[in-house]
Length: 316
Image (cartoon, rainbow, N blue to C red; front, side, top):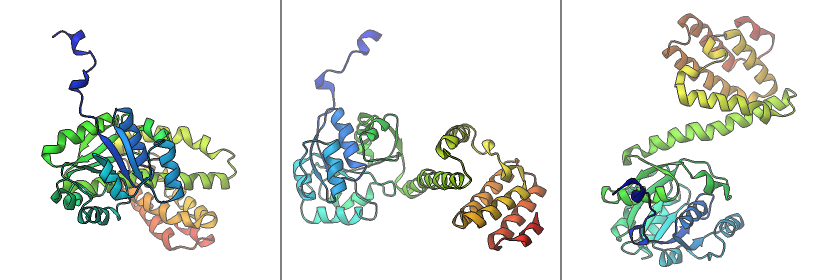
């Protein structure tokens, strides 16, 4: 077969079977995933939603798809997306299995980062096919989420015999499957939360402080800086560290903490914690000299409990 033939579109007979899709939990994630599966040729048929906000999301992303009870979602769909909060998931799965809502051959997909496939064991015993597909993406609950799934990594965990099916679904949603071992799911999820969730907190805090300092457009000031910092970090890791902590400028760090204590005391603990971690990493990678690190850590320890004021100048 020549190259031109190999690039021909797949015949319909060669494509994966089209599935009816249901969503249990119309938060920010479920409707977006169902909408992306719809673009791949699958058919959303039912969604469960409780709050007004979730009903609006379902109507916007899955127009015309009826809102029904969770058990009815399972009755109508071949593939069911369980997109509920992590702490709710085990109880939901147990309840659906106990009430007979799960039928043999059901593809049950949860999107929790914390859990692997074992949380679906009650459904597995009822004959379901368990898949854990976690999109490593932040969601807004709008149509932009469907676009962002293109190239998004998914943490995939499933029984070996379902691995190809799980990866195929991810690819159909435009994502890139990344296999995560069952026992590694909590660490995997912690890593993502440490990076993405805390980044939002840091950026929001930084914008507030810039506004307090008189900057009229904090977002415009931070955008290029943070974009470059993120790009450098992804390319070079700890070698991209810069700033007063990495340089060992203890006096500057002391001044920062004193200013934060005076104007934004709620930011002090986070600054000190991140400065200590940054110092440790910079020291370990040879970016920070040991004697400078010692002075810096003294300042951080002193400022953590110091109320500020003139006496704080003594440690600089």
